[in-house]
Length: 209
Figure 1 (tube, one colour):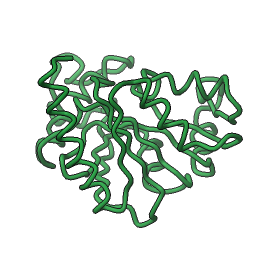
Figure 2 (cartoon, helix red, strand yellow):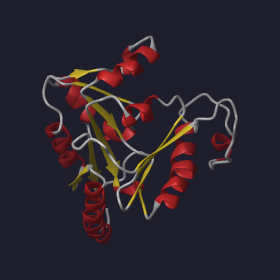
Figure 3 (cartoon, helix red, strand yellow):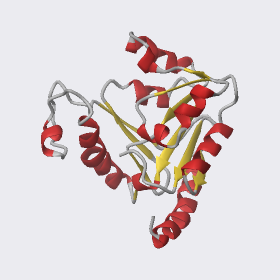
C-alpha cells in the first residue's frame, strides 16, 4: 500500500475509533492482517462458541483457520445440512463474527442482507460481536456508506450466487424487487445499547468488498 495512503489511514482511524466510542462501541486499529488477527483472538476467550455470517474479511485475516485449529467451539455453517439450524445457533453464541458493507468516518456501520440471519445476529443475540473492517469500506458519511453498500458491495456479492438480479448483470444497483434480490433488509448500527458488546477492528488493508 502507498506510504501516503498508510499515513492517511493511520490518521483517519483515530477519528473513526473516537466516533465508535461515542456510540458505545469499541474500536481498534491494526496496521496489517497479522495484527488484526492478534487483536481478534484477544477478544475471543478460549472455549467460546463462535459463529459468523458470510464475511470474506474474517477469512482473509486468517481468523477462521485460527479458530478451527484452536481451543474454540467454532460453528461452521458450511458443515450443516440444515443451514437455518446453523444460522439460529448464532443467537446463543458467545461471539459472532462479521464485517460490514460500509461504515462512516464517525462510526456508523451499514449492512445489507438477503436472508437477514447476519444482520439479525448483529442486532440481537450473541454476547459479543466482532467486526473485521478493511479501511477500503470507510465512507465520509451515511449517504456515501449506503451508496457503497448498494452499488459496490451488493453487486459484487451477487456474483457469488446462482441468482437473477439486475445488479448481477449490470454491476450496479437497480433498486430491484426481483424474487432473487439480496437487498431485503438494511441495518444501520448507529449506537450499541450494551457496552462492551460490539467491537470493530479496522485494518489498514483492502479487505472483502
